[in-house]
Amino acid sequence: MDDPDLPRRERLLRAARDLYWAQGVEGTSPRQVLEVSGVGQGSLYHHFPTKHDLSLAAISATTQEALDSVSGELTDTDRPPVERLVAYLERPRPALAGCKIGRLTSDRSVMADDELRSPVHDYFAGLVALVQEVFEETGLPDDVAHDRAYAAVAIVQGGYVLARALDDPAALRAAVDGFVSMLEPALQAEVATR
Picture 1 (tube, one colour):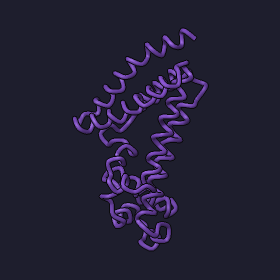
Picture 2 (cartoon, rainbow, N blue to C red):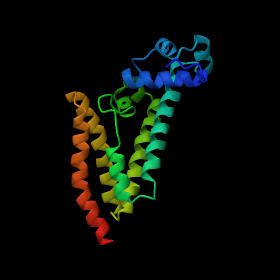
Picture 3 (cartoon, one colour):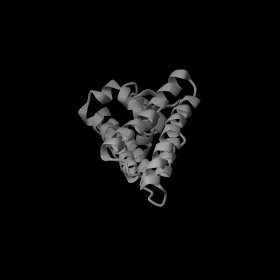
Picture 4 (cartoon, helix red, strand yellow):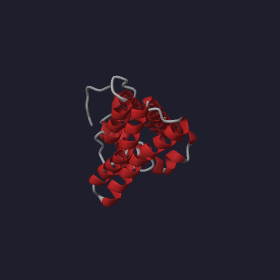
């Protein structure tokens, strides 16, 4: 992680984000962030006076980057909605590492702090809304699109859990493939009736 070409603040954030993904916010100390970033202690406290400040900045950066990435994929109107949904579901994911944001929901220090929990909440609410909009584009009623959006996001998150629990990255892929196989005929039928 020690990349001297990056500004110190960015090096600290990248180190924190990687450590939070690997071991959680609660399990990560400022000293570990310093070691991984290669930045001096003075810079850490200059940019982030408290661990809470660092945690909030790192979690916010992680959630915003992830939402921006999926938003670009799901809102690409040059592609049909069904194709965008399947592409979102089938995108490559580090199954055994787990979801960077989903893992934060198991971190007590994040979930017990309204400020730290807020970007996690906003990410999942935004993701469900984006997926729901794509389902609505297929002609599904709002309530059906709403439920399917939750199911799609839950399949991905549950797939991560299964992959980690079974120590088998294929578990995530199987969960996604199973959902897509159930989803495609219904979506194709909706498109055909429009």
